Amino acid sequence: MAWYWPTIEDEVSAEAAAQPAVGASAFFAAFTGLIATLSIIYNRPVFGFGGWSLVDAALFVVIAWRIKKMSRTWAVLGLLIYLLEVSFNVTTNKPGAVGILTVVFVLTYIGAIRGTFAFHRYRRMTDAAQPPAIGIT
Image 1 (cartoon, one colour):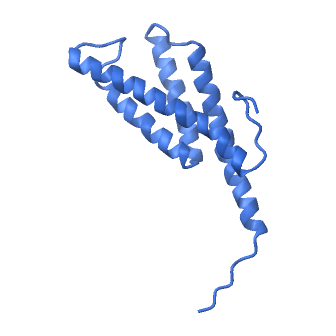
Image 2 (cartoon, rainbow, N blue to C red):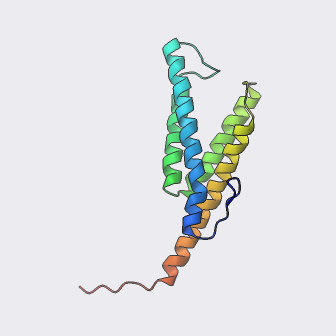
Image 3 (cartoon, helix red, strand yellow):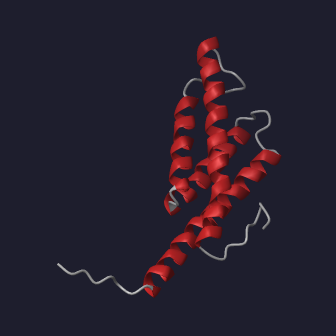
């Protein structure tokens, strides 16, 4: 299974397709949080990031957590928010705004979208195939 376009055949492979986005979100949150903390300590922007970037880091922690729980909405939001940030960095001419890591992150979020939607589709098929439990009260 290729990391950039994973094969999704069942619930397990759907979960596996979404997991790289959890790691990418956690990496992005940790890196942004570190840089934002340094900018607060030094009382000046570091690499163009200010203290308000801690909000951004917290948002990506939530994105990682919700993708880990297979949330379709947060998988889509993760991609959209990341693309919004890349667009902002490009328009403000931040150094290194677009690079190989950007392409990797976009592909991992696309994989998360594919994985979360497929996971829920396979889950519905599995639930529909199982007979309902009969409870005796």
